[in-house]
Amino acid sequence: MARFALSASAIDPVALQARLRDARAGACASFEGWVRDHNDGRAVTGLHYEAYVELAEREGEAILADAMQRFEIVEAVCTHRIGELAIGELAVWVGVSAAHRDATFAACRWIIDEVKVRVPIWKRERYAEGDAGWLHPAP
Image (cartoon, rainbow, N blue to C red; front, top):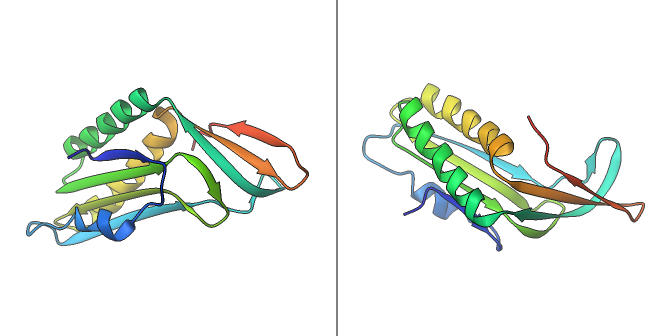
């Protein structure tokens, strides 16, 4: 089963967390990225994510494989939304399990930072003034 996924529908954190359960794991850390109502001093009314799907899935899988090698973790998963999202919706979820908490925190942070830099996903924010803008922010 793939560790990284793009989803055009709502992310289910409970189902994703269940994939992290393992008798070897004593800790789990997760990150949730939500759509906020502002950016750079501007009111945001919603956004749209687009991805180069084949490359995004391949690069996302590579990031998670790298994390499995780089950190002493049991499992890691990440799902990122694509399509239209409203304020407050879950845009990205990362979860990691390991024997100990330090590895989960470090791996979770590393994964989301790498996804933001390496995975070809673009965000188009809609602003309260009626215009919109494309972003692909680095951490």
